[in-house]
Image 1 (cartoon, rainbow, N blue to C red):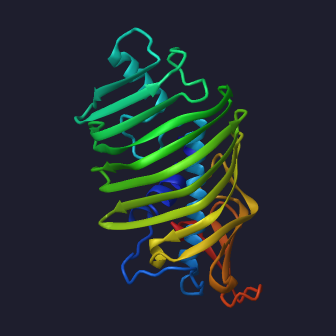
Image 2: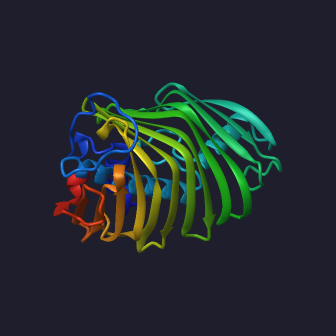
Image 3: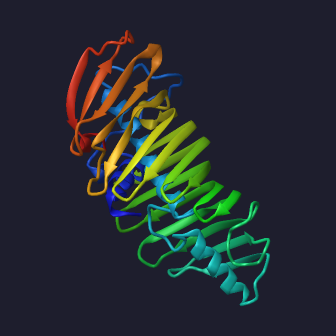
Length: 319
């Protein structure tokens, strides 16, 4: 992952605004369902889900740019391509159109890699070619451990910068004993890469859970959509979908992007962009980037289209 998005992605997405990133809070309390009624009291939590959705977009965009590279905790399966090479090596030097190999991880445990390489060229470059990985207590020897699995399948391919694929996670979980943190992801993502910088992605259902310092938060997304561009100088993205969060006991909000989010290469947080988080009875909170340090929060608790309350917050308050 590039340096401009490390903190934004790790803190907002993988650690889900836990205390390790400066946040806090308790996800306990009775569960609920249906849309969340947004109020002045819970507006920050609702806004946090919006920034989490944007952070997930950064993670998916980075993963797609590296053709399936797994971001976050640095375990031995950091890239699909490396895993493919490991499997081919384990099976011997002869090129094979398909195969399954078990690899011992650096710090113990194992990684099972299966691939379908129809033209046996040691590359994933034809529609239908795929690779799947299953980690069993796979340790990198530096505190990072992975369990569960995921698979990548090519759905279209013109060349290395014009392709589409699906990435399906099966309760994939990574943990780090150094920071006492963990993250898990379950669900599927469809993504397409157009040129060297543009990504579009969608997910019918995606769940992410994270634990740090004894606290766990989770969120899930339905009908998630992402438009993402990284030109080297800045990331520009738009996100949308329906999200639930343990911050409000499983109730849901709808997220839309009014103005694309822009994160400059030197920054951790957005300096431009407007997100709207809508809840029950059209109650909403609008999050507008003022600069890479602060955002303006607008709260419409009664759903009449006017904002009764506005405030300026540091982005770090939404971690």
